[in-house]
Image (cartoon, rainbow, N blue to C red; front, side):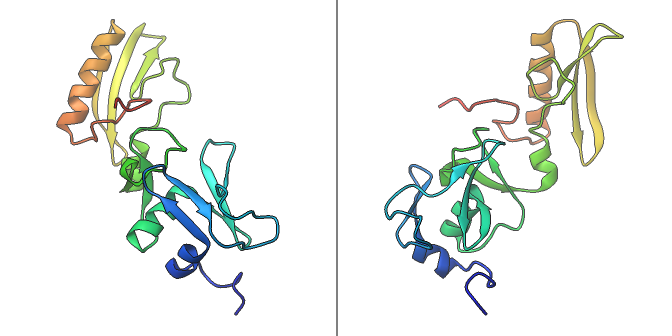
Length: 173
């Protein structure tokens, strides 16, 4: 079996790439092809804002490779960027979560409000704060004031065990 046909092993990963846990970046320590320069940053940013690394004809999300590099096994679930910055791949910013947990950080596509779990209802002319768990709404309340809606939703989210950075567009350092 050729190297391209085989699955990526931890040994193969660490023989070609070096991961800097503090910066969250990979650099090449061995050339997989003639177009790669040693000791340069590996990968590029894709259209969704995530960094990806091509290795032996396959593109890998950098955050998944970082997890694999540090923990020695590919993540079984999704990897969440705690601070919501898609190209911040420091291991301290990554956590393994289920699909359901990761979906909690999504904003509605039809929302005019740039806040997770808050949207404007034209018919009622009120802000709606809501939380869903496992496909079921567990919290929904309407407010005339957006700040009240945000505060109420965040308090309920913490009560329900959501991560403290849930709903933030950028973590506060």
